[in-house]
Length: 292
Ligand code: GUN
Image 1: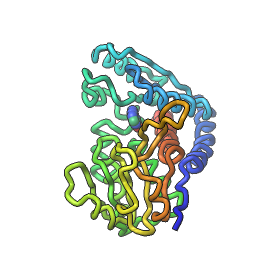
Image 2: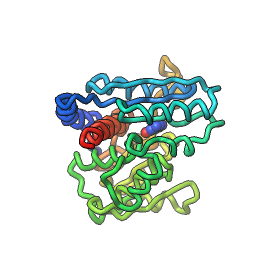
Image 3: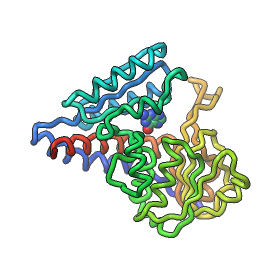
């Protein structure tokens, strides 16, 4: 078997097409969706992600404000920025790029964001709603992008065994909740660094979402014939054959394509979907603002 490509780029393009219409409707009502992206420090990968987010805003006609602070900035400075953005009535979405420098308390800063502007879906109010099975709040972008991509490929998850590899606040935990929520209806197991027999558990899954941040760890003997595999990993690995000395690798080894029925590529899989969902959350925040 050669896996079909779970093409996040194509799916994201279809999401953007719908957003164009919604953004035009906002414009008719005199509103331009507006997203602020805050980045602290000089982590090169984070700067690449933030630039992709700003470019997506430009493509769609969403206003973006890009705020950069040095890695030596204090937590109080970031707090002040968040308060200012919360108070700005012309601004609908706030995203603070993770990771923050180690001297900052990322969760405490997330708590300060107005939940209605929390387009990342990381505020406890939004995550709490997700735990309650209420899917109408701001949902975290990567897990909701994975769900949208599975839907787009016509996947019926009802009663299927799903394994989520990883239990992070940003991906693994919310992903497990979304897969098991009413409407998706998968039976979910979370596999993490302390799980016994991780490989054997994974090998029973109909759907695997890999979000562990370990390059190419999931090999074909972890995967059942015909399983659907979503690779959330985006890791830089040394590669002397490349001019720049590195390449991007997912959490899933390319040999899995011979076993899976569907596999999302890296890059071009989950990455574009994360951005599309961020744009959708921003537009939704602007629409909500408009209807208040
Ligand atoms: N860092 C990696 N992924 C994300 C994300 O989805 N949102 C934020 N804010 N930071 C990230």
